[in-house]
Figure 1: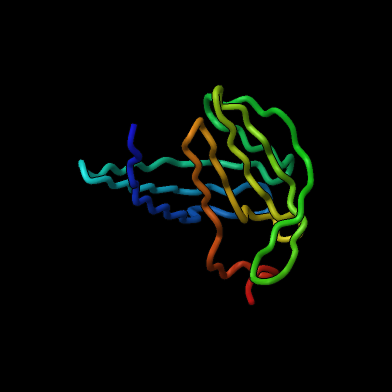
Figure 2: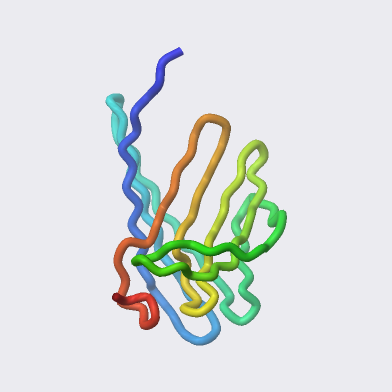
Length: 125
């Protein structure tokens, strides 16, 4: 059995952000030698309860972990979701109240989306 190369790009746009919630538009484009697919969806997070409901996923646990961002170790709250048979992890910076990283692992598939550039105070260089 051979392997397949997938070129994937994710774009995250903030549509609404205030002291209570954030609404994001996430667009994902994935391409292989057989073609390209695009998908877009809205995500709404409650910042008061730090609740991140993800449709079809079960929240296993929440814990803290350090994540390197722009050369600084940041304390993140990690939300671990069971995807059966995989797992999704969302790393949420406690101080800046923003997602720094998201990983998905299902069988042999693994993806990681990391914040590269931002204008959020506290995260800017």
